[in-house]
Image: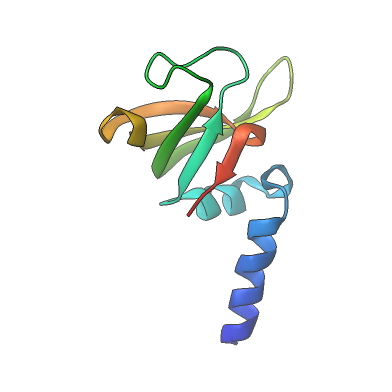
Length: 99
């Protein structure tokens, strides 16, 4: 049974996040530290497009009305900003899980 759980976690980790259903996605990302690449603009905190967030909770999993891109609305601790807690909308295809 433990081996099956480890395999499931490994499988989810290596599959694309976009392929998870909203419940699986929220469960998988909760309490994870992620690297997020903003494709639209540079960060005023880091000076580039890459940010690091610890996802504390996920309030919503949705899709952009025009582009259908999947996103999460999450309460995060902003690692790059001294751990300040804030809410962020993060596009799923721009998330890389670190731990």
